[in-house]
Image (cartoon, rainbow, N blue to C red; front, side, top):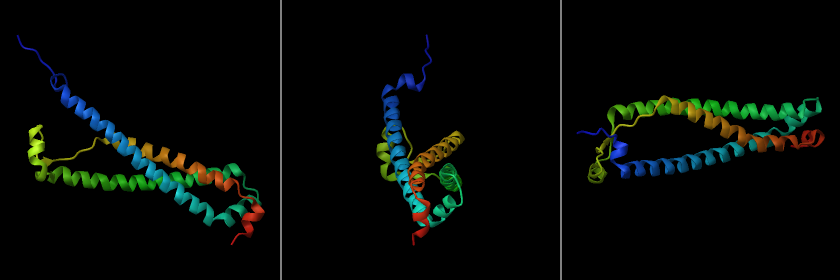
Length: 164
């Protein structure tokens, strides 16, 4: 009598190794997005500081604080979307190139072959991952833009117009 089992049922050690790798990948992604968030905060704070006079003038002629908040938020999201799209185009090209030619890991061939992997690796990324990344970039941009936008709201129009 024969039993059909999946590789997940057959190799618990490999399943645990993959789950551990996925956990570490989440840590790496979190660190990358945290770094991106700090970059966005820094950039948008500079935008607010460089445009203090302009923001003060907009407040002085009657632009509401809500609209100024939304203006900074939309500017951040627009920059994040442009960056995400350009980054994804670049990543599609790089992944396609290395998916065809492969990445030679012959320096690690002995170790990789001992666990059943080839020394040549052909990367690929599922299309839904690009959607996930775009959504994460936009969420990161929105969250990161809140502090600079709040900083802009604290400006007093008369003082902001007098700045150099």
